[in-house]
Image (cartoon, rainbow, N blue to C red; front, side, top):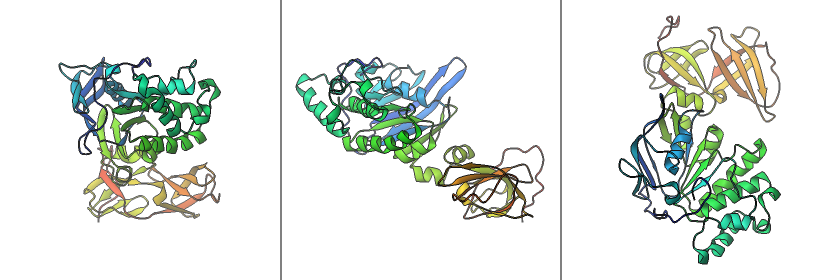
Length: 370
């Protein structure tokens, strides 16, 4: 299916490659717009049946990467293989409608004049198979009772399921999802994440999801590829990405985290809130990654911290604390509202901390290693 939603015969085979052979293999992918390097020297593999999330801030190159995969943009350099076949390279460019990919857009792009069943069957070229695939998709997305409705008669979540079913109906080699939850309210987004993952897994689909939402990537994806300024920074399973980020950007972008300046002796780091355990830390000036769930805080009239603000979420709260050296730390507490802005508090950090070499500081730290 092409960007306009038109169906066409595919030249790239369906996704039935061996489990150890990538469905997608990208090498040296580059794309520049004027002076902006949107994607630079990107290497990435997506394995059969995998749901991979491209995660990063706005302008990091993740949507451009998706558009290059789909064939909506021509790369300046690099190679993209789909099912072992080159679809984009120095002398090859396969048109979007011939790449055997399904795309779920932000606005779902359903045909308003067609019923649910007609939308689902639109991309299935073989008329003999169309009714069978439509029936399978209706079962998969759990919308049998709505097959004769039109998109305006559906909820946002139902429309999203139809868009996903339409993308899956032609049995694509790859499904691309471009910020698919951005048009849904917060409560519905949470419910739909599980639905979308279940549908993709039940279909045995291989998929690439683009998102700027860290929680979305961590809860949905088998692996997460973090991008920043056009480059791929780290690719890993969610738990490893969160526990062992490769640099401060990943540490602070994937989940909540604060960086505290300190001085390391290779095992411990002296910081404004005391000595923290950081096995394997580089020696000298470092920045220590402290996550809010590690920080314990309590009311103390002689404490070094001052409560700057509290974000209350009902089930818990995020307390921001100002420290004497101008740095800040956050603590995630239970729902009991015992602190208010202006309170003096003491802090302690539990567990081991990560530390990275600090950028050049404008002045030497007053802390000394021991």
